[in-house]
Image (cartoon, rainbow, N blue to C red; front, side):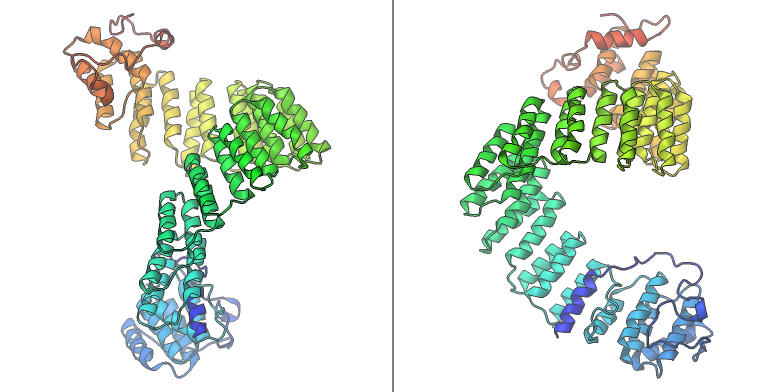
Length: 632
C-alpha cells in the first residue's frame, strides 16, 4: 500500500510534455531507424519488420475491437502494439477515449510498464488526456514495484490532485500526513499555491491535523506570490488550530511584507515574534533592515540593528551593506562610506555588493572621481568587478557627460571577462542619445547585435525616443516598422513616443492614424497619449478636433494633465461662457475639486499655470491670425 502512496505523489509532480490542442502532422511517434518504436521497452517487439497481427480497415472496426479488448485484454502484447501503430497512422487521429481503451486492455494483461510507455507515445502524438486516462495510470503505478518507472510523464497537477482527492474519498488509496505534506510541497514547488490550499482544506475535512511545516510551505509561497494578506490569514488560522508558528513562518512573512513595501507591518510581525518568545535570526533581521532602508527609514533600521546586537545576533556584511544602501538612497554618501570603512574594525571584509552600492551612490551624486577611486581599490581588496559594477560606472559617466571615458571602461569590462548584458547596452544607448551622440548610439546597437544579444522592447523604446528627440522622425519610423516586422508587440510607451515625435514634426494626421491603430493592435491608448495629441491640435488651433478628443477623454474617464488644462482654460474667453468647451472642462475637473468650486466656472486653482509652461507653449505655437489663445 505504501507503493500506492508513493505512486500518487510521483504522479502529481512529474514533468511532462504539455498536450497540444492540434494534432501534429506526420507521425512523430515512429522512429525510422530499423522501424522500431520511438520509445523502447524490453516488452516491445524488436522485430525489424513488424507485422500488423490485427488488421484494421475502418474506424467502426477499430471502435468495436477496442471495446471488446478493453474488457478482456489482448492475447499477446505485440497485438496491442500493432494496433497502436495503426491508430497512430489514422488521420484524424482517434480520440483520447479510444487510446484509453487500448491502455486499459494492456493493463488487463498486467503489462504495466508497457502501459506507461504507450502513454508516452500518446502524449507525443499530442492527444490530450482525461480523468479516465489518469485512472489507468494510477492503477499501473500502484502495481509496479519500480514506482519511478514512467513517473516523468504527468504535469497536469490540478487534474492529478482532483483524482488523488477522489481516490482518498472513496477509500481507494492509503494515505497519511506524509502523503499530504509531500504533495503540498510539490504543488508549491511548481507554483500551484491555490491547489495546495485546496489540499490543506481536504486534509482538515478528513480530520488530519496539518503541522507547522505544511503551513510554512504554503505561507512562504503566498508571500513569494505577493499574496501577503492571505498569508497573514493563514498565520491567524495556525493559532486557532494551536499550531505554533516558528522562525521560518515569521521569516517568510517578514520577507514578503518587506518586498511588498510594507516595512511598518514587518516591524509589527517582528514584535509579535519576540512576544511569542521566537527570536529572529540574522537573516530575518537583515530582511527588515533592508526593507526599512529602501523605504527611507534609516533611523528605524539603525534601531533594529541595535536590537539585533543586544539579542546576541552578530550583524554581517549583508546587514551593513543594507544600511549603506539606505544612506546612499538618502544622499548621505559620507555616512555610507564611514560604514564601509568601519567593516574591517568589526572583523568583516567588504564584498562586491558593498562596493557596488557605494559606487552607485557616488555616481548618483555625480561624484565620478570618488566612484572611480573605489573601483580602482577593488582589485587591491581581492575583489573582481562584476557586470553590475561596470554598468553602474558606465551609467554614471554618461550621466555626467564624460562620454569619452566610457570606451576605456567598456574595453576593460570585455578584457576582464565580464560580458556586457542587455542592461549594459540599454545604459549605453540611453546615455549616448541623451548626450546627442547619435552616431555613437548606432555603433553600440550594431555591436550589440554582433555579440548575439537580441534587442528587446526596452531597447527599441530607447532608440525611438532618441531618434524622435533628435528630430530624426524617418529613422524612428523605420525602427518602429522593424518592431512590427520582428513580431514584437509595441507597448503604450513606444506608441506614445512615436506619436509625440510625429506631433513635434507637425505630422498630426499620421499621429491620429497611429492613435487609432493602437486599439486595433491590442494596445489601448492611455491618458498620456491623449494629452500629447490634444496639445498638438491646440498648437495647430484646430479647436473642433480638440473637442472631439476631449469627449473621448471624458468617455474613457481620463484626465488632462495640468499643462493641457492650463492651455484649455486660456481658450475660454474666446469661446464664451456658455460654450461647449466650458462644459467639457467642468466635467474634466477632478471630483474633489468640483465640490469646492463655483458651478459657473472650472476650478482654475487645480490647473495653476506656470509662466515657464505657458512660455514654452507660446514659443512653440505658430497659429496665424487666430485669437483662440490669448496672453494672460
